[in-house]
Image 1 (tube, rainbow, N blue to C red):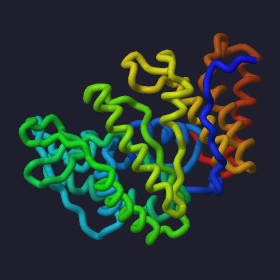
Image 2: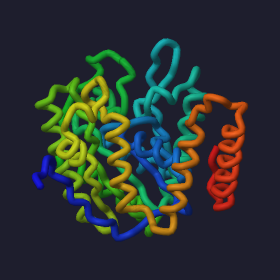
Image 3: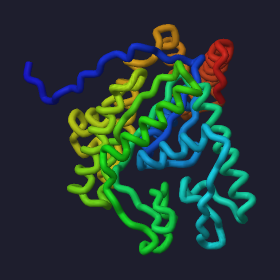
Length: 312
C-alpha cells in the first residue's frame, strides 16, 4: 500500500503523568490549546498565568522572578489602563496598586505550580523580540506603545540557551523531580514574514535540541506533526496560521498516547464520554428517551466524581 504522508516518530517518555499530578504550561498560544484540553478533561493544570507569551527570554525571566522574592514591574499606560511589559494585556489595573496586586497574585500562583508540578510544558513561539529601549529588555507585549520605544531583534541561540540553562537550574532546585517538556509552536508568525518566521523557528528548534540534552528535559514534536504530517491548509483556521480544532485534537491524542499513565486511560475515556453527553442537544427533552439519557449522564458524572476528579 502506498503511503501518502510521513509520520513523526515519537518515543515514549520515560515517565508518565496522571490525574494525581499538577501540570504547568507556559509559552505561546499552543500552550493555551493543550492547557484547555487538560482542563476540559479534568486534569489539575495551570496555563499561562501571565497570559500568552511567545519569546523564550520573557518566559524564562518570569520563571526566575516567580521563584525569587522580588518582582520588577515595568508599567505602561494605554486608554487609562495600566499594564505590564512582562505580561499579556488581560492582566491590567486601573491604577498602579491594582496592577501590582494582580501581578503578585499571578506570581504566587506560578511559584506554586513551579514547585508542585510533575511536568512543565514550555512552548517557544518566536525568537523575534521587541526590546524596550529604556530598559534593554525584551517585552512580552508592546501593548500598542509607540514603535520608536522598541528595537526589533532576532535573538541568538547562545543568548536564549544561556537564559534557559539558568531557568532550568532554578526550577530543578525548587522541584528536583520535575520533568520539563519543550515544544516549538507550529503557529506561523506570518506578520513578521514567512522567511523571517522560518529563521525564527529554526533557532527555536536548535535551542530545544541543545536544552533537551539536560537531565529531565524532553522534546515533544508538535511543530513537526503539524508542519510535516498535517501540512494541508484544511488543518488550519481561516487565518491560515493557527491550527484548527481538528489539528489540535490530533496533536493532543499523540501527546496523551505517549505520556498518560495506563491506569488513567479509562478515566479519560469516561470523562470524554461525559463531555460528549453534555454537548448533546436533546430534540425532545420531555420524552422518556431523554429522561433515560439524563439519568445515564448523572450516573456517569457520579462515577467520575467518585474517582476524585472535579468536573462541572
